[in-house]
Structures are given as structure tokens and as C-alpha cells.
Image (cartoon, rainbow, N blue to C red; front, side, top):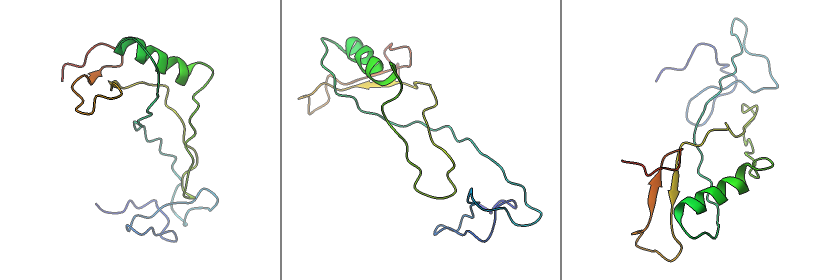
Length: 116
């Protein structure tokens, strides 16, 4: 993939991609861009519940009531911020002790079984 023309060649990364660090001005003629990349992260929550639906509801209460108790920490200078996008893409309910995952099920964002 070619390197976009608006990145600053003063900041080459190990993988050859150029990045603009938030505390530096871009090279002359280049314009700074703020790209919001929406990606999913997996957060595993340990809960006790009678069934999968109750487990998902308990996990949601722990995660979303009072703010997300997980912090995304940038580890490079070109990352300006990272945070939760307020969207659940789906669930995977695993039962402890089910090492063969025979009782594991995938669910959609509405907590209904995922048909896939």
C-alpha cells in the first residue's frame, strides 16, 4: 500500500508507515488529519449468573453503569486519544469449566442468539 501524501516523512515507523505526532506540525504543504478508527475490542467480564442472558445483562451493568471501567492507553505519540465507542457489536457467553466450549454461544448486540 502506498504511503499517503499527507504524512510527515520525519516520523517513519518500523513498518514503513509514516505518522504525524500530535505535538509536531506536519511537513510544509501537508495538512493534519484526525482519523477516528472505530474498532472492536474484546472485554472479558467474570460474572455469576443462572443463564447466558442473565450473564450478559450482569456484564453490561458492570461495564456501562457509571462509566466503562477499562482505560485504553496510547503507546505511541501519533495516537491522540482512545476510548470506548458506546456500541456493543455482540457477545460470546462461555461457561466456566466447559473446556470443550460445548455450552458456549454467540449472541448479537440485542442479546439474541447469533445465527452465524
